Image (cartoon, rainbow, N blue to C red):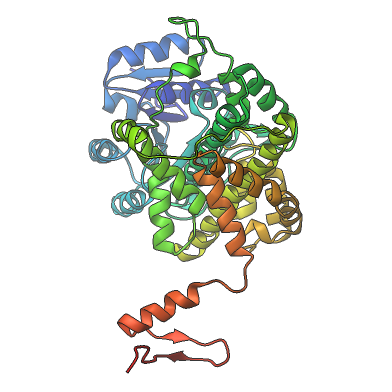
Length: 472
């Protein structure tokens, strides 16, 4: 039996949970782990040998090992598994104990669980954790949200284990209720958008410009040295070099073109619609994964649907790659801008009290969408905390304005060659519509009034109006 002096506990000793707990132990905190599968407990104890760790497959023993008020992190599958653990765990906890869901739970589920757990005298946090297995082990970006008074119980631990940028921990209190899981959800939506954009850039490089894997490796490696430096650009460059042990080919060339998903991108798009926020670059990234799964239909369509014929790239490769760089730069900014605008709206509508500068700050390290651009974003929100859209920041506006011409050229080049670029095209359309003072939606509203008497507003007079549009 263990003594009741372990600082923090974690339920779910899979790869993520085990790595996060070992990270905690590395920073000198006594920690306890629980898993029903004793083999996972033993693996944790073996890897944590020499550190202040305790592991068990007995839930009551696990709970009794923790100092009060207890702090317990759950890293189990989102959905029913979280509720099952809470139902088993809650009766043996004490008032004032804190339970933290560190998985990718839907924010509305987190709100429901907060109400249920609070009724039992307990505290409940939804905490986004980004960085994958390596991040969990050596420093993730952490997005906790819930009751502010409970945050101090775990703040020193979370600050210690998080990634650091210029000495700043990549963790901050996100806000009340489900703020932590909401911020992580939008983070993942932005991730979807940027991954899809990189896939489109890759497609233009290989199928239009005709670059080899080695040339694409060199290109992305060079991009990662400047203002496009990011985790996703870095790993993309490395992917081009990996050799398949079975065939001797580059591994990327034998990977099937069907992308899966776990739902966080879809949740982001769904709630953007609920909030009335345009999220086009992220929306089409989600639907692109759905379209990729229609591989059987695509095989049939490829034989009966025609595209451009006889089109061959004859331009300067280096110049086209330079345009691609600028096109991706603009698209990358717009994916951030759409996601952050959504967070700005949600922070107000859901009473999260989000600090947008803090969000940008903690995303600079540890997380999947970390990039040099986040420092620009952090400065923008520090100057104007209530900035509704990053495109309204002077520095950001200058960057996208100066490079939008190359985005146009790339979208046109891809279309001419029959290459789909949904996120780059959506980013360009968003840019053009956002800067436009006279959209054609006056026609849409006239149509609505015509067939449904939905009324319309006028540009020369206040109020709402209805007209009889049909010919007499």
